[in-house]
Amino acid sequence: MNVKLIAWSNARVSDPRKLVILAVKVSCGKIREKGLNYYLDRDYSDEDYRRWLIDSLKYPSVLEHIVFTFYIEGISRICSHQLVRHRIASYTQESQRYSESYMRKAVEKIASVLEENFKSGCFEEYVSLIEKFLKRAEGCSSRYAETVVEVAQQAFVIPPHLPLEEKHRLAKFYLKALAEYYKLLAEGIKKEDARFIVPQAVKTALLMTVNMRELLHIAKLRLSSKAQWEIRELVRRIVEEVSKIIPELPSLIEDYEK
Image (cartoon, rainbow, N blue to C red):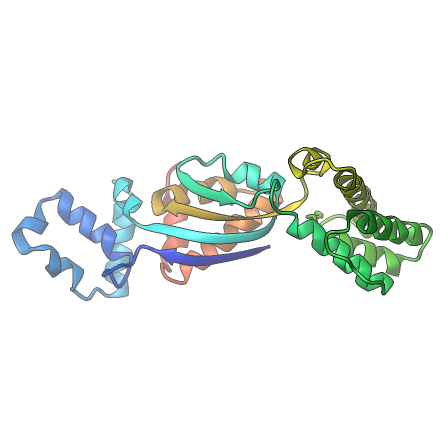
């Protein structure tokens, strides 16, 4: 899993936290008294920002003016399905109809382990490589079981808390499904139809844009110990990224009401 904050509200605003202060001043009519530039160009201390941000939770609509865009990769489709339930955000997700980049990485890894050539686009060869690899995996040592898991993780998310035996079992299931997927492609079935056989654990990538108020709402729900482990880890990393530019974020999450 990888999360990168790639853009946020900046333009001529040097610090996105200024937008919260600006929104408060618009609300109370101070902008027309002192002018826009007075608040935009003014220097604020960290304590000033902290005070304004904590106080903003009384009227959280002002937080909606701060917007973040993240590039997220390596999460499962299971996780992405949970994420997009938060509808006050914009998403662009890697298409399974046009892309199979993660699944192809698994085949490339198999070719490397077997020390065989990899012919990109030859689906029959993909199937042959996967089946040969799985046959070798039968009855092998725990060390080779780790290799099977490592190969499967190129394309699929495997719960990290599972014991190796269960990870190995899941990995073999995923790779068998992958072989069936490429068999369908070799038979001329379109990707948009062949993908129906792919497990939801397959990895995906997406671009997500969300405002700060909704981010607080997402974090309040998904950082809970009741949340599923993968989306909890995803949101933890999102918060970690945003905290680099808004260090008050953890305190805001703690005090934010759902």
